Image 1 (cartoon, each protein chain N blue to C red):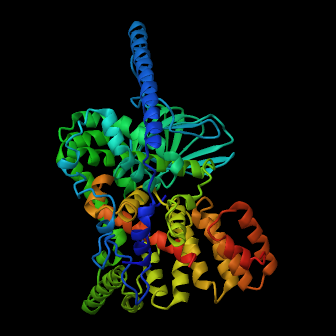
Image 2: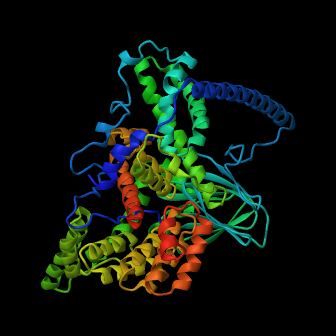
Image 3: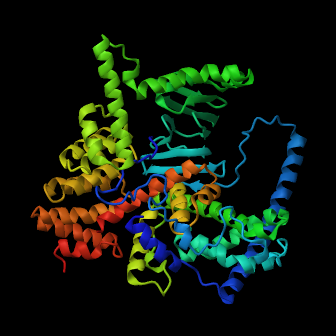
Length: 392
Length: 217
């Protein structure tokens, strides 16, 4: 059990609420009021539905309207665009919200995007390796296990998925492989996909098999490489065993052994952030900080958009803080820039103050300390920031 | 576009394996052992304790279980000011399920399930609001009650500040395990995921928290 777990085991009894009658009465009155409001809304909605149905029947309009029926937006963006979550577990994360560009990431579930027509502003929705870019339109993106479905209700959208770059118009619906390795294998109009599923298990298996093979080839490139001779084959087998070994050892926390095995195998997959982070741990925690920084820098420089890049930059700062404080300060600054909305950014700024102090750049440390205190007056590192910034 | 799947481990050489990816304590200690929740792994409490309550008696159920819902809610959300609203939403949404319950002993488990779902949704929206600059955070030094010692108060404040930066599913799984003190099986049940997934989420959150707390010494 680690220190944190032990501390929490004692501290959690203090995370509790007052359960006296006053509180209960207040909550109960609020509940009754809410229930009443909800009933009124339900009745009004039912009446509206009846009215709509009557009008619809009278006009005899064919129902070509979208099937997605979320009624109030889950998210309103500053430009007037709206996002409707269509599933209970839908998860949309804004990445960039600026006048010239809005970038959202759909990480789970389905959502309908009603985008304001602003030609000067780019509106982008990412779902895994599929990117949907629009100018002004309404569309649904569904994040499924292996596929992303895009259904254009109005206007036009551009979809980039792997090597494909397609323009979809109102009424178009298409599915794309969620991950780049298999995009061309799966991409097809939804009608074709639906036919494959409808044809039974064979249809599904036929489309899934090539995808699986591709993924396996990408993750284990040595497996399909032909051996030049028996010795090379044995060496390749040995390298694979080593590779398995260092990862397993690192996962188990045996970083010294993991580093030894990693040094022998020398096969870190630089396109795989998991692998780079694990290799950095093996190096850092076995007493090889410079090597750890090399792996971490690859994460930061080559996978800048990955959600782990800020943590990698932050870790570089920590590793270099005492030995190369000026470089550490740059790393902390980058960590904060990569993820400015997180609590990591607050800590990174505080650490940057310390790093500049250690580098002898007291004016810079002081300026950043003042910035920290202005932005985070109740920050958890206020005392340290004041000390390193020379503000005490 | 990549998903967050950090495997950064923080087990320093020579120290106990505190980063056990299973989320369980390597020592074998179970956080739920000293936890105050008192809920069985199944989420049910003994029928005897609540035999007198008719699940369809809304006010009686509310008065008996609102403090329990509030406590879980606070542990998941960390903000006292959101608790009244959460409690009310939970009981509003739980009512249909309560009407169908035949065993009074199942009330508590059902309410816990609804509370977790509601809290998770609030946390997702909180994250979105935060990215948009509409949520300025909270003073988490107030999350602990007046009886907490300074160390506990300080640790909890830091932990809850870090939790705000985590994905809501990882945060909820970790909070249920380490703050509410639930068993892993129950965490998986409440989060609606497999045991392996629950362990992975807990471990991912735990290592991120350790990284950030490590900074503060």
